[in-house]
Image (cartoon, rainbow, N blue to C red; front, side):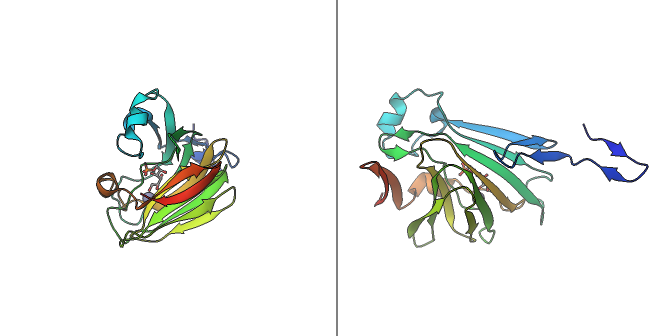
Length: 193
Ligand code: S6P
Ligand code: ZN
């Protein structure tokens, strides 16, 4: 509930973010949950994914969308929580995407846990940037991005992107990233897909 004190023009904010957890509450906050059943053909071991408990949550996204998607020059702000887990020896991760408008960049920052930001350019060169509490990531325009939880708890990170960036999931669904983060001897290894 927004409290307005018209006597002095000072108002309460319409939305809050818990700094420690990234949790958003208030107006125009949406929530999306991705479970194993929603992530067909994302992990390399699709046969193993199919056999796992389909309702298991892989990641949750909250986003503050103050303007309609597609609005020029607006901003969106979100928090993603990737749960701890693996499909075979591949860590739980997001679907990954490019932006529909290819010249739109994005910021990510680490809030909690240990992760990797998988980045791929148009020539399909893939590299991984470490994510941790306080890490800051500028995702350049036209770079595909996916996040991976390599820790033993939840990975939580924040994001800020342009409201007209849009999401292109199809290219990643069709061609994937050229590398994957696989656990070997208890450590993450970036291996060709
Ligand atoms: C939006 C931003 C994040 C992701 C979220 C889930 O541009 O990058 O909010 O949407 O981390 O990832 P994905 O690949 O399923 O959208
Ligand atoms: Zn994005």
